[in-house]
Image (tube, rainbow, N blue to C red):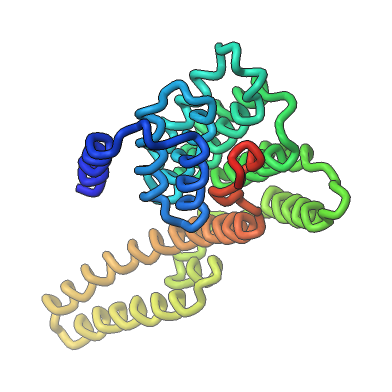
Length: 307
């Protein structure tokens, strides 16, 4: 409904406001003002209207970038990707590429940023290879952000060796000692995960022959004690029932204890596996918190946009 409403409003504005009354400077001043003040929906309407009536305006590609970032800031990621892809596609095989090279590369960068936010890491890596081939002279700030996002993607997917390879691309930049501190921290954490020796699920199952010991081995002391007490209680009830010549009741308690005992062994194995996974996930989440992800308003062509 929101997208349909926006489309209807666009059509009404196109119909009611003639193109002749707007210059490139007007669109710059008003459209970029709306963007800078956080009125992204308004910026989309104003700039799309101008581009509709002035398809050959020299400012068009730059205004399209602002439109794309406005879409991204309102979480309309597919629309943002479509707009950015349009810039790349039109410039890629165009004679205008040389004049708009920075815009071309930045559009590629913002596509990566959005794909990363969508956790589309496979598509991210493909686009990353494309930007490496198409933009060897990429802005250094954007290049550092790409390395950070790529490393974060590998860490998210638990691809530790590839993450280390990505960190090797991080260079010491004067005045940015924090980036090297983060690099050293990540390398240390990744190596600790790679060298970590997981607990054995098989041993957890064997120890669970004594109810609760598998859970205790996994590090879940409370669960282990609970399992031991419950199994002991039903075993005692079954024995007591048979001792008191109540075979039916003893049989019922025996069957229940049989299920509980098997569940205890399964639980011991599963607890070890869960604790191993929890260690890795905790490490992963800690590392991701320390990686700087670019905001959606990173713009290196501000001069051309009068921002």
